[in-house]
Image 1 (cartoon, rainbow, N blue to C red):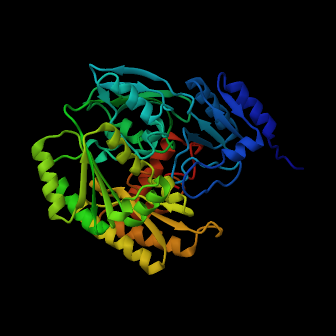
Image 2: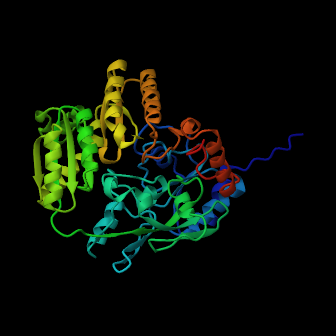
Image 3: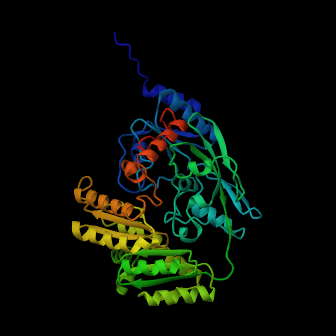
Length: 464
């Protein structure tokens, strides 16, 4: 006699709708197919989700998790779906839990220099609002206009200002998080210092939704610097030469807030995308910014650029022109991605090894006859090589896989990491043991089991 009794999808969805008081439960098949993948990178979804839930309140999140626990349904957290590592792709028969509609700025406090926001608040929107109070939000990923504060916290996003202000973790003071068992906890404070208890705030930052669902973020804000900021461009014969100049600027005391590198192929792609002519300068482009027009900082930067082969230096204090220059870096992704199928990577190496890493990427491209467009946050050693291949090819070509393996192992050999800021997701979780080692890999699984014993929160991501 067959004793196996399965719940139907209709029964599961009815239970889900009963437990979600204010959010929207989407089950339309066409909608779910459109929502199956996140926006960037290789698509690794392994089937359609049962539903995509647009949460509006903490109770909605708790209701989703209640149904998920009851029926053992995987829950994939998502805000604006801008992952480059398949961190929020659908899992077959899962719930995609979106907090994009939880997008209210709850507080901006000028005296305390903090903001309290819901996870769906867009990074750019928070920065714009903070500036009305004479403050700014420092984390500045290339996706600033479309990525959310909650998503940035979940992945510990970096960005263009990391060279001076640090990654997202350096701006997150506290969190509210709903755990897998439905409890909402508060970790951290709104003070710059806290030494009480284990640092659970930083455990959740970068955990990619595998330990809990972020419902509120308290972040540090900075006063807008006095004086005029200076934004500029300089050109070098290649990325290796550019990297040598960047390393020297970092050690000079000039304290730049942006040092962004784009190789010659990326500059050509931008020219095609923007209708500009920057590739006429030949070689690699450096985008730089100093937050203050201090003469000593400016003169030191100029001297290093000239000594290290920088050419056609152009500097401006005009905000509109500065925004146009910054937009070049922000538009790098769509400009490069337009050339074919792609995978963008995210290694980081010690600054002293940046030039060697840049040179190695060029050698890999030549050796395997691949198109590799290299850009990145040169000021903090974070490199983004993007491999492009024909849209007519199904799957990821073997030579692309080989290039990734070579670049990853080179970064590790140089004392770096294979994920500087894009997180791990499903694309790179098989590399955990090689980077972390047996003992740390095991501890990470033990932490996951403590917070999520049923393994329903974003399984197959982060730690595999």
